[in-house]
Length: 148
Image (cartoon, rainbow, N blue to C red):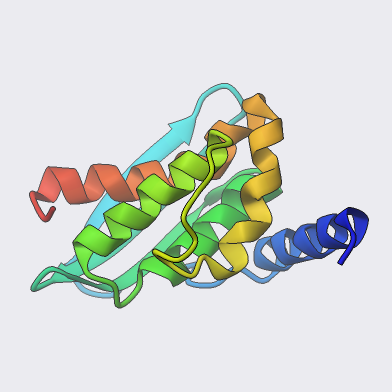
């Protein structure tokens, strides 16, 4: 597949997650953590909810407002971490962070799936904070709960 076709496909994946977000909403009940974060430079804001039980991310949902990059990244992140062990979710976050910094990543470790569509963001330093907002919220929530 040529670079232009791949770029177009990645844009379509990002826009699909933006227009049809997965896991948008709230987790019912009170057995979850809620993490609010924002990006003051552009106005992106997210409320992430995680339900962690016995070291597993049982559920992950988000709500918020922001650009297509931040909201699609939140959609992709919640899909990726659901059902994963907390340490695997954190390892995925590190892999994603490395990808955003333009580092070579070992895709054998995790199947990034749709998340790969965000790798072009690394070429736009101002947008990296948009892409990493939800991931940083997940890390913060897990760290605060002592789940890692």
